[in-house]
Length: 311
Image (cartoon, rainbow, N blue to C red; front, side, top):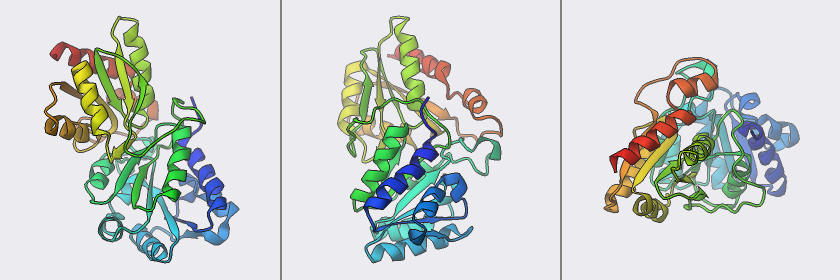
């Protein structure tokens, strides 16, 4: 298990923020949780706590972006994709201002705070905004790159971050590219296309399936938009069975995006969807919730076997 995603994020903000003086960081009074507080402590002159005022935070960030600054706005994902949405649409999507929307505590990773703080629809909402790029961080090294890339690329983007640590699947020298999925394991019987915390679960499931003689390709589709259409269609042609896995409602997220590609591309492949089955989760420990709602390794294995049986 690697470092907590939120800790890596805060450290990356400080590291790359020191290198680029245009980086400014805003937070809606949860900087100790989002870890943007690390930036506040290190570079206080470029940090702004706007209070519990997410819509105002996005508006202030948009103003800063018009002056050449690179604003990172921080709060829990559920509040960015709801209270912050009007600003995201007007200033990011329509006006194409260079604001970075950092969705902390994605999915159900704010486990004990319950449904009001779970984010199950943010990927669907943010990828529907024209001109937005959308990413989901899978591990510590990818999180670091996502922050660096956000500073280097002049475009509005939404980056979903988890609260907890996730299994490490990359190394410090891994090369990422916007719009390109990462093949973590090759296989011929089925393909698991995952994002975020489900990437580690997918790798573990593939290892277990290999013991049964089932060879599964595993793809980390961290770039939800733009999405890697070529890799999805190639995987469908090669394996004939796709399983999408995400910590999100099964409607409109990664699974929906992959289904759009398969349909438009005329792929001859079955698809199974792993995610929250159009319901809200309860409160509880994170790992127990992942198991209860079918977001663990046994659930991925069962979905792969079902998809293969449907071919």
